[in-house]
Length: 327
Image (cartoon, rainbow, N blue to C red; front, side, top):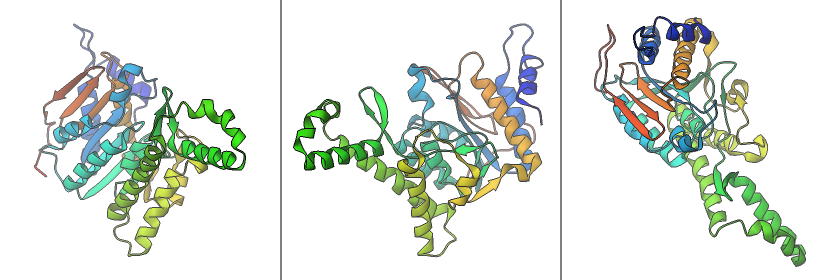
């Protein structure tokens, strides 16, 4: 397997146009995607965002999972054969509502979905991963808590923490009304309806994951064990008191121990090499010029590339030996 540095050298060497200095990032990624698909025989989509190098506030909404991504899936699913799909997912998460739309569309197109996490799929991306039939993770891979975050005083705050704080205020002031004056500066930062929004957001994340697990990953399990297992897994990932931080990593062993169907990436060395080569080529693109904040593409060359304030749709480019089919 070429390392990240070796693929970077390839990009800056043989993939660089000697006349213009431009690097053929698209050809680099498609080369390694083609190799992966030749190995697996499965249609493959990459969803990757540039969030580890520091998110520019101007691009934060673009990096996150949002409803525009559904337009991208419509593009990359076109002519992409079913019923099997590999989704290589690298994302900080985003909107639960948008994730719901993406999952519904994906599962309407593909019967067998394998989500591969080469490094990290956090928050709503974890929710997306849990809508698969199975998740492929390496020793280095991680998912994350799915507890929702809500905007308060210019920053995102865990909904669960706000609910617990309101209960603390209620309990303290119920016992000693004089404590209200001490809490007043904090309470004045909270806008009307915040408690209800926190509760419904928490309920939504749990219920979506529970529904997806019951419908897909655990569908072969008989009731009532299927529903109980789905609820237990959803509660685990949504439990902000257990995880302490929304950004805390949940590694492969913990994901498996809680009941998620997990395959080890290292069990197939060829697969690991191919997946990580695709991942390296994608990250190199995200860190190149012009600056790209998100790539959603398939192994046939269809893709949506997002820059700050700009979206580019690219039509299908069939690699040799590959044909597209309607699914």
